Length: 269
Length: 104
Image 1 (tube, each protein chain N blue to C red):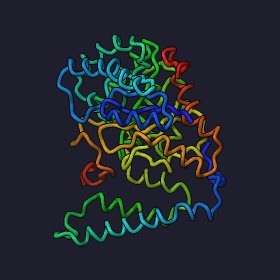
Image 2 (tube, each protein chain N blue to C red; image 1 turned 90 degrees about the vertical axis):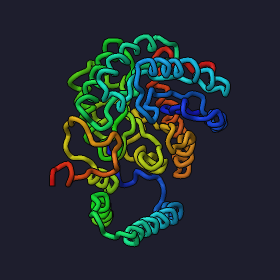
Image 3 (cartoon, rainbow over the protein chains, first blue to last red; image 1 turned 45 degrees about the vertical axis):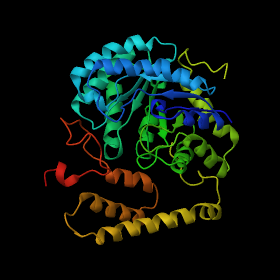
């Protein structure tokens, strides 16, 4: 069964990972603009990175029949440097014009600082002005609960964005309900150690229903699994969930959210 | 919106057959982790906040009757819903340090 990998940082993955993803049915991947494991020092470094996301990775994925789409934005961790953030934000509109750029992301909060919050609000305003889809990162572990609540507050008070054009990612058991109740899309990250297992992902689907829910591996440079989505599909089948539900979560839902951008086109997949 | 009873389509026996051994192994790993802490060259030193919260979570496992994951997530979370100037570290450690952040 074909599936869409809704969040994987392919710049950090090997070509073999593309091959394995293709063999398991992946036909499209979206990549968030993210933290590379260290803080970049200049806006020029982000210029190179956005070029990589919009040109190099697209071509690398195409060799395996996978459509590569990207998000453009300043990630939460590097949002702390307000001076650098101002320069990077000036680069973003140019890259959003690229045919594979679907919107602004991933943006949001990391340790939930005032600087992160200010940069986050500026990017929300940019998304609102440019009428872009938005992908929002929520913090890890002990910061996730308050970070999610403050993310919802920022969306409520500082942005004029339709809720169905915003995906709030990395939800877990204690944050999924407020996100869905506020009308946003919610993303479950199947990430070892600090995220959800495929089993917990299916538990959340069972408890909250499949509407406005997507799943992803959030694969990156850390210990992570770019095949986590097919493993969730296997877990759903093991529990006896129908194929229609498996398809809704792993293909129809992400296609519906991403398809709000006219650039997302799988007709040739 | 949240569903509980009946939301998992498997029968009880099937859940036990499919998941019991995995979770038995996890239980033994937790026990071994706590034993390992006792066997360090400086056992009991420091009263690390992570261990304190970890043991609180274990108690929750026994006392909670539903929504156990959510209750544990809340137990390890920072309950102060406001932004701060600058954290000591750019990386979260896994559980909220009540003693340090509340100046105790």
